[in-house]
Length: 293
Image (cartoon, rainbow, N blue to C red):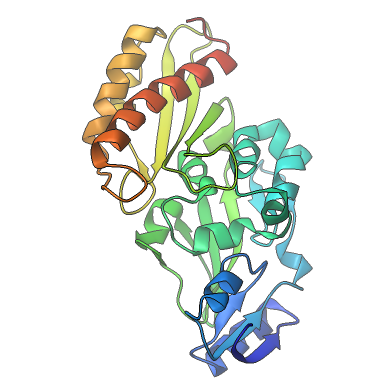
């Protein structure tokens, strides 16, 4: 059923790096919800695997003294959704990953795997982009950090060398404090389906709740990689909180995206969805922030 050459179980991050260095063709396996499917399909026949699933140091969510939220890459979707820190400060991330697959997938699938597979449809990816997440990567030369926008290099490709391991997803206090978010996934089914497109918005309003101080919006399946609508964000900053401005903003987002036609949906349908979901996501985020529409 699963054709593999060898399975190595790492006892630490440093051992995982050593094993990956010693076995240049090996693949990392964590929850296995992606890797095992590929093996079942015969795409990784005769492969070597390095398991990091037993590394509890890579699990959990912590709040550091400076307010930085640190998410272990082996944290399952279910644990992210239920985590008190996530619920209090960045609840939209929990809502987004709660739309992944079904309960079984969410119990075993990890947020690290969801990002490291590099696919633009990953439900966590657009929300992490909207929070300006930072990826902590550990390799033979030590630890480095990289903005998530630079981590995605192309379809199914991320900036992770073979013998490097993602060791944390970091969201800094200034990226979430005062922001309210909303995520919308559009798919053909309500569950167990890949997003036709996904839209995640973060909004920060003025003290009187009448002006957009800041807005961040990111998409899945709107480009080869998850993407922010930077020109649209700039357009809405400083403008009054009303549906007229939100609708104009939604039209502006179409200048920042480049969806493709696939068997799931045409480019034209995705553009229509992006405009509509942008308006809905920002409107809902503004309401959560205390704005009146």
